[in-house]
Image (cartoon, rainbow, N blue to C red; front, side, top):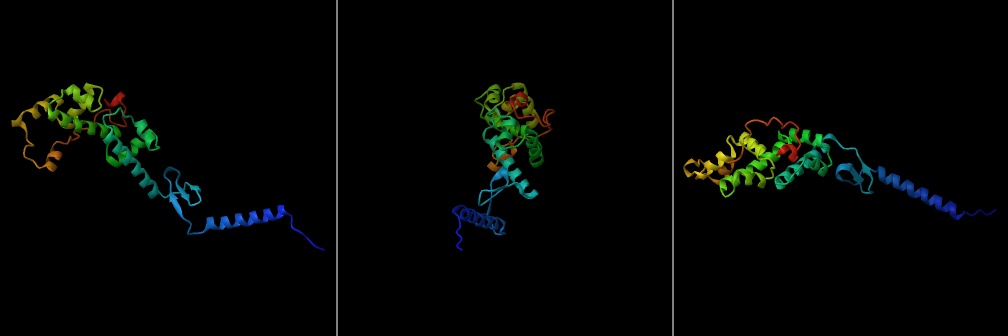
Length: 207
């Protein structure tokens, strides 16, 4: 008696063998994998895996924090807020603030204001802009907040700093090498501003 195999049964058998081979390949120890960021690990077949070690998570967090810091360095004059910064690296605002402080010793707001004050010091030394003009030039919208923060970081008011910079006899940085000049003119945090604890970077409180 002669038996024939139907086309449907042949297709099912072939498909079963293909699935079996795919599973063997997926379980092989040498299977290539690649990093894809937030979603974790993706193998060479495009399968996502959220399993990652604490060290891998820490390195991804540090990379995200560096991107936030670099953005503030570039866009200090823009009306930045912590929510927008957090969205850019796929974090919540609270988580970004905590991780940023743990990594750099100050909040995103504190870091942004330090960058703004550094730029303000350079503009005030140049002498062709008023204090109010400098305030707006570096991204602050409140002259009072700018002056308070400037005094906290530099040790004198913007007006006093501008007068001192205009007086050649009061210039204690004359003749310094460029590397020491940059260090001498960098703002130092005398004390943390009262509102600096987890303060959003937004202009509502930043300036």
